[in-house]
Image (tube, rainbow, N blue to C red; front, side, top):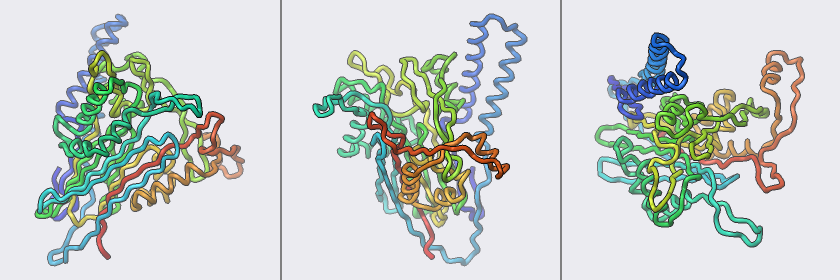
Length: 430
């Protein structure tokens, strides 16, 4: 979508694949699923079957159209003769390895042409473990993440630079390029990567000086976050790939990566209610056909090495990254944040107004510091139903118990998560 008349945002495009192809693929997936269920159950009459297909098609078309509908974005009218404001740009990153030490961040600034300056921002949140070397002190095998070991090596030797330079909207997009590079490592080391992986978030910022615009490309796989604010208004937030994402469940079933009759199973999780109270909530695991279970529906890694080759370069759960492109005036105030669920699990802009302000205007360090404080503070654990009732009627006492995420159990584990964040901020000089 394009805007004129000195609007701040010039163009917005949000895609996973060409929209016509994506809608047709989803509709066909739904129809195939319904056909499969009908054939197996053998109890649906033809008229009922046609009605079911028609209802499902209508539902998925409505859902997809709703996702790609164009929204009006903030405008700013600049009067003729008004001086062009000077801007300050800041890149900031912060990581706190509070738990499994599996978060990684990457930033790079370049000037490939006289007319262009670019920034590449990336974040990975690792999960899973592979048995590492034997530790004679603990008499146990160390837990490693082979995927992150390979990623660390690529960052150190510069190989990751070439991977992240690839066009997000090309067939050789950075996530699949990384998968192929990881697959080569598996073959070279004769080691599988089936049980380990990482979310991936990539943001590429380009300042095209002659056109006076900022172009931002976004790619994400997993449940890590990307949020973009323009002049204080949120204009983009990526789609998360979890067991609650119905489109992802359809993809996993259509690609035969999970059992269609039980693609997920329930799990435990938590949510914060305010700055002091926390409650339990329901989570979901994706159940892959190889028996693994994962809280997210896709990520990089999870490559199965067998008989000298990689079974599927897209991994056990496949890849269908969220992709977006946005364009802004180069004098807009822009705040971009990438962060892991170690932040989104304990920061709630929807429930806590001060959190909303930190997410909107702060840099990576300030946001990560707040998340770290939340993980380390003393909480009051309670029932969500009881909490909501106590808000309605202050005379009702709220029963709660103390809870601390960083309390270490007898196995040396705690309930915290690693915290990582990267920010790119453009502000006008006063």
